Image (cartoon, rainbow, N blue to C red):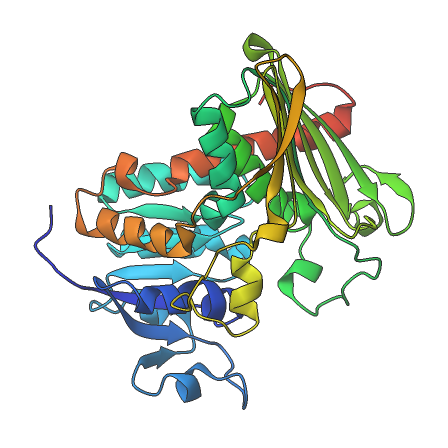
Length: 374
């Protein structure tokens, strides 16, 4: 247990993630102090030194990581850089928070997990959608047994984006799956992380990759023409008699995009639309704004349950009061300032490694055409 009351935090990378999902929440966390930022090439209109003139600034991560005044390093760089940067930061006795996707492989995740244990430092992954209010609503419904034994669980991240982003416009438009790029790692890591939180590791995984924009089933073999823009995975839990369907697509023409459809022996829950926090932050809003993270009533889900008369009743299911992404940073700060034990970390790297094993099983299933045990 440390006696330190405030920890200096450094951000590596100055893109959307740093500006929207990390810096504002660091500034709201009393025990964390924004100390420095790495931006390789500041430009007019996109300059960390201009935006934060009172901070220290670097153009290379190596100099920041070597700074003895830095306690915590937050990696907001492309995922193919995370392994080496996290290794370096841990070896320099820094606590580390890594944006998702964590790293390209579960082997790398295991190695970083073990290194953090050896160094007695916190290593956390930013799976912030564990604090989406719709997901918290699902957790509450399951905890209160409102739906009975779950037999099918659908989770979606579907959009209508028929035009592919220009090559090189962002790292997401350039990295392949072997570098933790593409839809399976970008969106799939969120969906599969939530499934892991709810149900643990599956017994079997079946996957299919599609290029919906061009109308082709693809293999994801590493070549550019075989990269998917959409993915479907089925996770089986034999002892529970449960099937989980995970889908992310770009050709979904809907006024209300599906998010969750949970079916149980006592009821079902149907929810459309995404948690409002990201859109609020992207549009310039703040986590301190009134009603941040709260859904309007017209966005609430539907709950169908078997009534006392044996008939199915359909009712509005209000979304729970939001904890918001502020809660993630509160928990992370407590882990840094506390025991540093993995059970105190909001998203331990060891759990992110398990999610990567599921992702790797999806890829292997696509390759072999068979169900794969992760």
